[in-house]
Length: 301
Image 1 (cartoon, rainbow, N blue to C red):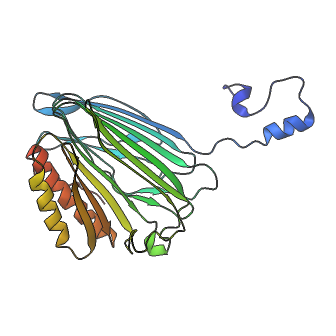
Image 2 (image 1 turned 45 degrees about the vertical axis):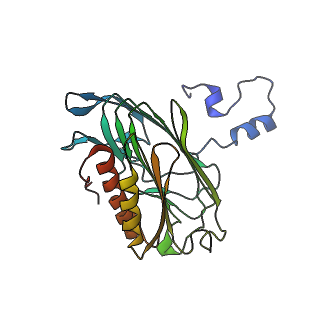
Image 3 (image 1 turned 90 degrees about the vertical axis):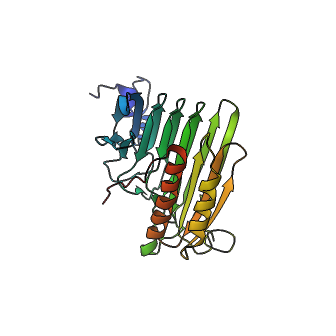
């Protein structure tokens, strides 16, 4: 007997069911996919940022955190199943206390596998306390042909908080000729503080369309958005980032200023190395602008 009871197995316990009713109930497929949850709380103790609370359920977990010289704590968020399947629902919540500084990343790119049913979903909520800085810099997402993925990232900033946020994806497994062959790709980013919205962005793409054409990705297979938000002068960062990207021949980029305390960088890259190198260079400049911190070299395969 299933310990969850009849409702969990899909078999009705009603004594009045017919044979046909029973067959239809038993043959109803259960939802494919897993519900993963991550709750992470970080706080500053002395000169260091530490994990004050953490719990997770697979397919989400974290690797052992690593402290770096500038008092930031690096935490890698891991999906040990190898990628997302249709029906997966991941829920991530990160809270930074006053003055804390943390960098959240992933060990590698996130793969989203083909689905014949439900969409894979990921909801991320980031709360950054007074004077704290959060760097959300996961590797890019790779939606396989026939995949469906929806992501929503919401960030709330307290006074004096800083945020570096990267949202990047590939058009698919490009080397296998699968560019723009996913079924659906959605990504929404919203950042606000006590005064209201600072940055809102959303894309919803259907695969199989001419997204690589003129006016869209224009032949580039890698797309990224990098937002840098903080109560500091970001004009030097904007100028340096724009000049650095303009000097590259393998990317197309634009850098814009938000109405309140922020800069947004849009990037189209021809190949994964160009995407990664460009993000790393802009990220290094953003760290210097927000915290006066040196570049952070993450060891990844």
